[in-house]
Every structure is written in C-alpha cells, then in structure tokens.
Image 1 (cartoon, rainbow, N blue to C red):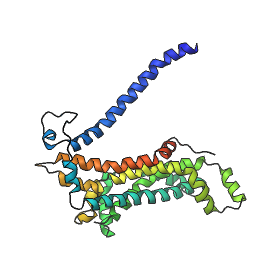
Image 2 (image 1 turned 90 degrees about the horizontal axis):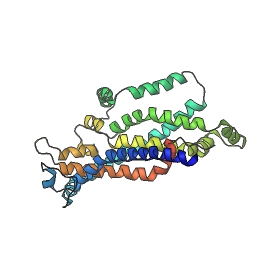
Image 3 (image 1 turned 60 degrees about the vertical axis):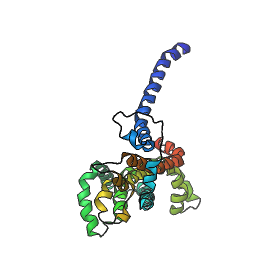
Image 4 (image 1 turned 135 degrees about the vertical axis):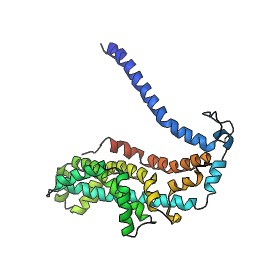
Amino acid sequence: MTSVRGLVTRPWRFAAEACALLVAVVVAFPLYWMVLGAFKPAGEIRSSEPRPWTLAPSLDSFRRVFGQQEFGRYFLNSLVVAGAVVIASGVIAFLAATAVTRFRFRFRTTLLIMFLVAQMVPVEALTIPLFFLMRDFGQLNTLGSLILPHIAFSLPFAIWMLRGFVKAVPEALEEAAYLDGASRTRFLWQILFPLVLPGLVATSVFSFISAWNDFLFAKSFIISDTSQSTLPMALLVFYKPDDPDWGGVMAGSTVMTIPVLVFFVLVQRRLVSGLGGAVKD
C-alpha cells in the first residue's frame, strides 16, 4: 500500500517542483535581463534583434555609472535613509507590539484597526499632503523628508507582524523572569527581544527594500538640493527621452541590487524562521 501511494504522489510532487521551477525562472528572468543589459556593449543594446546572451561583454556601462559625479554621495544617502528606517521602525514596532500585546488599555482594538486601515491607503494619495507637511516643518531637500515617511509607512505592517511573535512568548516566562528578580526593562531587552528577533528581521527586510528602492518620495521631496538625492534619482541621469542610455540604467540598477542581496544573505537564516513564525518556548 505504501509503495502504491508513493507512486501516486510522485507525479504530483514532480508537477509541483516543475511549477515551482517555472515560477522561479519567470521571477528571475527580469534580473537576468538587467544584468545582461549592464554587460552588453552599446551596439547590442540598441539592436533591433535582442538576444538573451552576449559574446562580447563590456564594462563600459559600469564605468559611466561609477564615473558619474556624486554617485558615491547618492549611494551613501541611500544607506543612511535605509539604515535609519530599519533601525527606527524596528525599535518602535517592537515596543509598540509589546505594548498592544502585554498591556490592557482603552481603545487598544481601535488602535490595531487603525494600523490596518493605514496600510490600505495608497502611498500616492498621501504624497501631496506629505509634501506640504514636510514643507511646513522645513524638511524639504533633506534626508529627513525621506526617513520620516518611510518609518510611518513601515510601522503598521511591522507592529502587526511582531504582535504575533510577542503573543507567542508564554506569559509564564515573563512571570518566571520577574520571580528571578529581572526588571521589566531587562526582560524586555534581554529575554523578549531575542525571542522575537526573527520576526524583527523579517519586517526589517521589507522596510529596507521599501526605503532603498524609493523613487516617489525622493522625486517629490528632494527638489533643488541634489546632494541629498538617493540612488534611484541617480538613474535619471542616464534616462533621456530623446536618447536614453539603457546600458547605464541597467548598470546602475545592478549596482542598486547588490546591497539588497547582501542584506538578504546576512539575514537569510533568521528571515526564514521569521516568515515561518518560529518562536520557541
């Protein structure tokens, strides 16, 4: 009976693996085409018959990207914005998730519903109000105009996700810590924080990607001071409506992707457990 059941399930398993491989190829192909375009010479990029390979790879596009004035400053600005968003949103979300999970107070349910409603509002609809808000606070043409909105948009998702991790930690563990003489602050940072760290890593990945790839806020809030621009804005240098430099665009996009890949590699183990909701008692 076991062997017959194995023969029956084997075709289904093969079909599932084939579908997974097909989806992976479809998802990875745009990345492959981007990297390929970065290494293609100008003649092949402008060819009317594009080919999914190149026999004469060139680094000219990367030379134009790294030779662009202020490119290093744009890269550093993106790191500052993404790093500040990840750290600030992570700490605030952790404290807020602990508060709405461990404490009983009025309007707690209303507050959680407001977090959900905040996620339903499209970013584009809030860009103009945020522009006037940043103008009134004197934050236009500063990195603060990029950091603050991304923190605000990252918090609802992060709080909801971390709430499940905090709730999964048994209250008996907290009571035992208090009996052993641990203060609330010590329990919060030395016991609870390491247990919810996988979830915190998972939320930080989404926050990092959102801040790193942002173009809308950078285009709207950085108006005149180009020294405060980020990497997505640097790509506009290579895009001209009458004569776009697609090689430069592809090379710049490839350079932008590398820090995201590095970040994924550094946190991949905790990311998997975080997405799976793994919290041990």
